[in-house]
Length: 196
Image 1: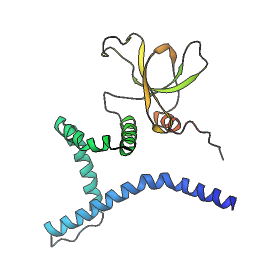
Image 2: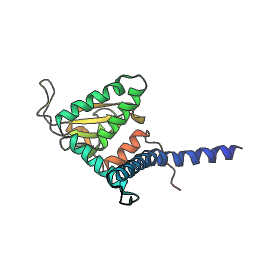
Image 3: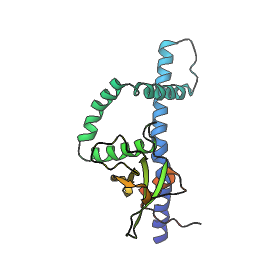
Image 4: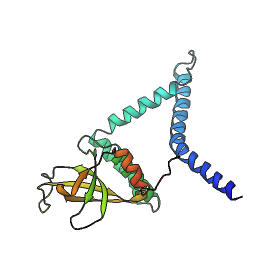
């Protein structure tokens, strides 16, 4: 019975990331395919529907959404749509955590997190992994030390938040690890994985 529970849990944990990734995509593309089919039947009644053309429609819709979200007006409208998600208890915790993660993993041109660093504070044996968000603090407000410093984001494990610290550059040692790999390890608390 002990082995049964262990293997059941291992099976669930193996399947869960796949399902949480694939199900929303499957649902979205199934919905867009069904929408495409109904539009095709109404607008082009004499032409046979091409199965899978909804996937193309879905991809075009996502590109169009990306183009629309580049305008200030759409960003303001989206901010209004987001308000309930940011204010309902429990929902706001989940929504904000997912949003922070997506913003971090897909930064804009002016917000790059492309360097993973090890932080070593002088006189302290503790080390920490962080992500350089800005290596130039010249445009920061008055009162922030700007010389030879970087803005370093330190996420907390399991994406419950994080800190941005303005640290002296000589405390930072670049690590030879990708941002994705470092973020994945940070979010899971750098849990040890046994190599099989």
